[in-house]
Length: 210
Image (cartoon, rainbow, N blue to C red):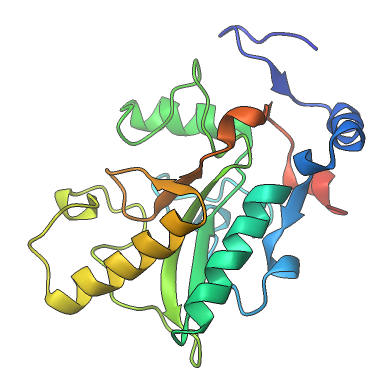
């Protein structure tokens, strides 16, 4: 498998990906909507409601590696007992999209550089919010998804008590299942097993059966 100009090994062949899955089924990208009952999807990068103002995904899907998806399923089960649920904004992201993002944003605090790649590219990061289970309506949280302001920081305190409480529920539920929050974005979580998985650059169209 070739190394890209940044010295990274990126899986960009669907046949190579499938061979790796056969060798280790944990590498499979799992469709979260099929796995997790009651999950709400709001995949912003399949719309114009994102940092770039244009769709960068051809399909509004959320995929994660098998153990990461199972961990997120356990988060959902915990939240269900509270009458809440998860809303997923983004999960697996092809490496080429990360390159596109950085070309526009050019700030490592908010976009992974192409010489490092993103944990989203590994199928091990997920961006989530909270919803009321009964209605599917979003719970108030500090900011909108991808709103890059000080209030997006996970320790930002100048917020109404109910918003702080909602954020604490999300952070605690995710942490219990092995997810580590990125402190600059209350919505972004990396699973602790991310180093076990390769960078991927597979478009959603090639992952139709996953």
